[in-house]
Image (cartoon, rainbow, N blue to C red; front, side, top):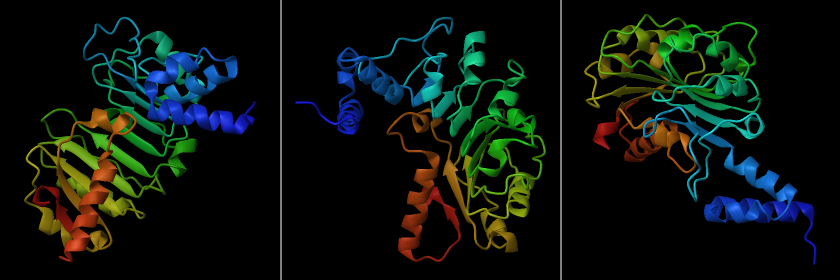
Length: 276
């Protein structure tokens, strides 16, 4: 008995997503099934050298529903890509990034000084969610790029304990509704002001602090341009899990905090996540 083509695909997709250990066996069934399995396993790509030398491609672990390599063949399937701080991008991977035409979620945490041309490739992706180191963001092309009108979620990261560079106005991103300033420990009121003043569509602003607190919350809560914005202070999170299938993103965590506060009927617009 032959199943309809569409039903076959649904069965394979269900098997791989719910029982990843079946993937190697399914890849041997037929060429079309292998393509289906590959497309699922390479939707999410996380490139991380934290536990290896970074000179060779990592081998996929049994049951892992994301890829640790980016090849020319699989780049066409990738919709979520994470480049960790520890990863040393090979020339081949940099070239293959240009083939990623479906990436709408991107984390770019590699050092800007090592890969100064990577931003031209990023600008060609149809991004909706972007987590990026601040100096990379400052060098992104700001005109005639497809992602500019599509981006809704932006996380800016500044790794050091120094005062971050002055954040440029964000009015070139007309669809951004969620912004996260992941500065760690320095104080950054001017950055918060810039986001509130120049993001007309803003709904949620997350401020991450190592301490999980910020003593200027009430001051910014009372601003007129924050009237319809939920400002949330959160402890710095381990971001890598956000970029693997099944991981809770910082945006989902923020929504839970907002929902919990709304249920408590406090009426406060500035929310301290440590109090939940």
